[in-house]
Image 1 (cartoon, rainbow, N blue to C red):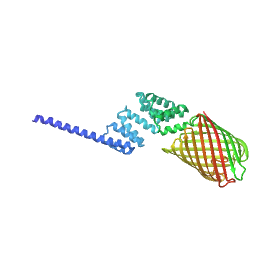
Image 2: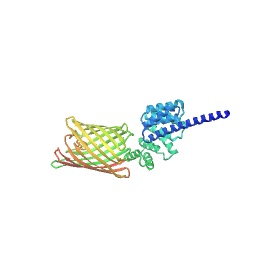
Image 3: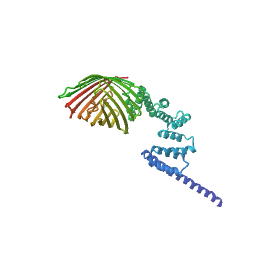
Image 4: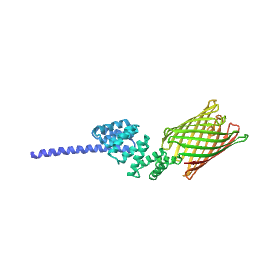
Length: 443
């Protein structure tokens, strides 16, 4: 009997140990599932609190630490995420998930050199890993290394021709490199796979107007009445050249009959885009010595997408005429129903060195009737500073509306007609109407 007692005791003890292990695993599994449920709801802070408790209870479980670091990074706590990844790498220096996570979070912090070094090391060991290739392509694109971005993304397409991230990176990289044909090909491939991809739709819309050179011939006619003698006319030839992705230069020659002054004028200028958010624009108009001819203009513009379809724009413009300087601050808010369908409300707050000031508002909407035809219409109230060619009548107020039609044919050709009517409340004339016809060739 005694000989059976000890084996039975050992068996009971073993069963207790096994049951304890099962209970521990069940406890860990329940909490992990709870954290994952919070992740699915994008409650990353709540998930991080659960993982934090688990990591304290199981300090040697590197898989838990990696999950903890991920939700920390998704919640925006990048430094803490990197600290957890470093802790994992101190005990497991070749951990694939920890190295990739560290590289990814480093790139989000703007530490691109560190990120690329880690990603290249991972690619040396895993040259066909799509996840690493996507990360390397994306970071290369962010730092402006378009050649490597294309190289990595092209390698992904060789492995998986429908990989969406790679298609988007290729479209964006080729667009930055001014290879608009290749960019269009990849963005259309992406939209066939993912028609609701907002980034791809915006890029596809932008590419419709992306060309290296633009040449336009325009005719403007403005008539005033009653009880005045003015009928303004301008024939203009305009050329725009895209030098690089951020830099454009242009020149214009005008034959003008404005407020009784028949003359010729020329303009030169350019724009520079520091980023997708910040850009500057400037031009100089030279002609006879009158308020309608001599002009220097500089514009600073900020454009920021708040969330989804809503974006805000702000610009500051300085105009110098003969003996008159005008400053205009212009905020705007836009809502995009699609990449080519939107509404916008813009305000203009202007003042001059002679003491004049103005406040104006413009509302406009753009509708894509067909892929080749767009219509724009709207109304305005206040000083017509932004439309009147003289641009010096800050104290003159008006109300009016406009409608524009733009038709594209054979891709390289655009015909645009703009019509406007203005009702003046403080001027020598009561009303005016104007029309502009532009023919554009772009290549």
